[in-house]
Amino acid sequence: MLRKLVFLLFMMWIAVSAAGRKPPPPAQSGVTTFKTTSRLVILDAVVTNEQGKFVDGLGKDDFTVLEDGVKQPVTAFEGPSQHPSNAIGSGDAPITIFLMDELDTAFADLAYACQQLEHYLRAQPPHLKQPAALVVLDNTGLRVVQNYTQDRDLLLHSLKKHFPQYPWKFERSFATECMAQSLVALQQLAAATIGIPGRKNVLWVGEGFPPRNLIADMVDVQEVIENAINRTVNRLLEARITVYPIDPEMMESTLKIVFVDDLGPYGALIPHGTASPFDADISMGQFGPATGGRSFYWRNDIDEVIASSVEDGARYYTLAYVPSNRTDEPKYRRIHVKMRRGLRARTRDGYWTTDAPMTDKMVAVDIWQAAQNTLPYTGLPVALTGRPGLGAAKCTLYIDANALSWQIMDNGDRRAVVRIAVAAFSAKDKMLAHQVVEKASVTPAASFTHLLGQPAAFPIEVPLPANTARVRVVARDESNGHMGAVDLDPERIPRQASMPKQVGGD
Image (cartoon, rainbow, N blue to C red; front, side, top):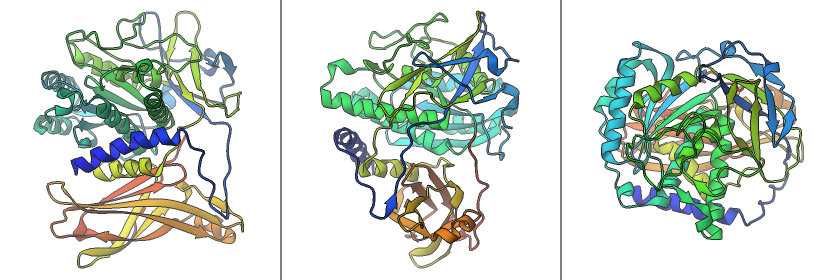
């Protein structure tokens, strides 16, 4: 299984490079596709004064948004008190994801980081202010240690009983593979949380993949990495994820790429211009300022760093605008939010106007990763019904029709295409069987409005080999890449669908 994953990750990098040199595939016959040259840009901004203290009570007129130096009209605005409730079960943000980087971090540094996270949690009330999840990135991929909860003691228990993997890839200098797995992990977190409204905060606790200088790479390698960074940053933007890289290593390394701002060695600012902040040097620390967060190095108070980063996630302003320059020119657009003297707004650094294309091999990696981990994917509300049989179950997967991308066919009918992955796991989480199928739903134009009030149905067969303890079904919209997932006890497959409440956008 590990060899297969490594192979797929390797193929992903090769596929990205090839995709960058080939024209996009022609549209399917009989289907009309529409191209847009504008996007709604949503910014979550933390405003502080000269002493670094959070500033509340500001209005829309206090913010001036610049994109590539051009003022943008703010079309929507929310103050900190206007954000949705963050109670478990409400389906709303802000939420915090603690990611322990066991892939790229020395064992001793990771042990110290876990100890500091424990110190932070013990200082919190029994009922956390925000829902939080604990995940790890290790040699095999992204894994959930504890799903979203506001129970502090449950998080502590999960942290204490988890034993980290030995970072053999880090020790053996698998630099390119570590970078690939880290970027895939960020993309998966974006895909998993995109259906949750509001800001999501990822505290990346670990050293991050080894820094890399693109200028020293060959042209083909540069293209591979640039496209992967493009896709990752834009996915994080779409999902409204802010990243806080927290490096627990205590010794300064000459290999680290660190940018220093007026607050100290946080890697938070790069001079605003027209170039991407990833044009030359690449490091995990850059994802802090690129997404509106902060990057922390060479600190022994990791518990306090975690506390301040979590607080950021609960006290932010939200601004939205449609860029005035609506051309399709592929470039990185820099964002800057100006405030009155003495105030500073920290938000994401920018975005790419076009997304790097996805190939079939990359889509396979995308859905394979979603089937492997146990994160709840919220991009598509899904439910499943069926009747268990000998070695398999005849099932129907239901997907909220409002969440699907429907294309208009030449005859006026509507068509949505999804890719569905089904995987069966043992009690020890070993994959026993898996399959991926592509399904299409076609609805006559006359009944399409009626369909939007109901789920779209996709018949599938679920393999149930002996010793199956858990079944995971993942659906991926082939048009926009949004995914939904459902986990089942093979002996309790429901006979009646219970659709989850649709998680709407902003």
